[in-house]
Amino acid sequence: MVTPYSSFEHLVLSVCSNRGKGWRFVMADSLTVYVDDSGTDGKSKIAAAAFCVSPVDRWLKFLDEWNRIARYFGFELRNFHMTEFAACRRDHLCQQCLAGHTSLKEHPWQRWSDVKRKNVLTRMAKSLAANVEWCVGQSYTKADFDGHVRNSQAKKSLTEPVAEEYVTFAVQRCGGSFAQWRADNSRYDRLKFVFDTSSTKEKRDIAKVFFAAANDRPKIVNGVEQWFDPEEGVSYESRKITHQLLAADMVAWATATIRARHLFRHIRFVEVYWIARIFVSTEHIGIGYLDKRTLARWERDALNGENREGSSGISKLRPDDAEANQGSAQRDKGEVGCGESRKK
Ligand SMILES: [Zn+2]
View (tube, rainbow, N blue to C red):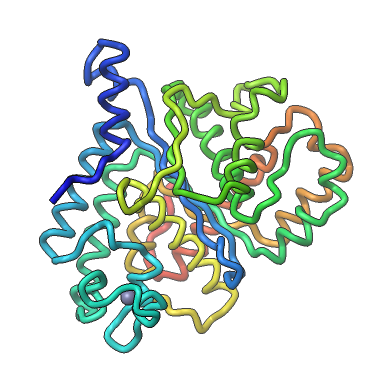
């Protein structure tokens, strides 16, 4: 079998050879951010995005562990996707299998017992938590976004770009949390961003709100980055080849599913329960959502001109982040029945 070309290995090689300082230099000095979103299809009522951040050596360890898990339990990472895993069970097939695009060969988990399903997801989530240095997932309903952001008069009064696409705004929110984490921890590592392959429209939107050097906006305000300088590059890759994207897929899926469960009680919660209880027990993985109230407050502040000073594409909703994450982590914890209180 031919090993598929991975730009991840290419990154490692190119960074090393370009600088001539070897492997260690890369490990100590650069962070790779894998970004994924959930809710791009028209049927979904929730938009969500996730960032998973770690140095190159820890991403390699993650990849090694997930490959071992897949090999041991008999599936291939290139066929893995949280939505399809959760939806494809003994009593229920996923859309892909129903349409005949995939079968037992690609989705062997459709025959697995719940014990095996739980075992696999628990191992994957624990490995993710152990190898990712920092991670965030943000979600909101598309209806709230339409009402308070996309169709709001507030957008016209702002000087900085605001995402037009549902999921780009979620990516923008994660960026704000990431910038804050970097500022709080004095993390000035060089950055590489890897996005899941997305539409041209989304790419334009992401470039506009995220890497906006061309807009003449100050890069740092009050110690926090207002846009990112991806010194190690930006790429759009497929999770079928670059499996680190599956980490962001898992977190984005869990974030969206928890929010959906709050709103629509009939949503299946089994798989997300197994995963979320591991995530919320950590200090470095935050999953949260923006409720209607938070988005309404953003709109009001924008209309009053309070977002103008030092506001930016990635950080303007920042003041609410801690509250949004902490608050929902508490709620989510209650939801998944973990029972421990979160350390402050
Ligand atoms: Zn399936």
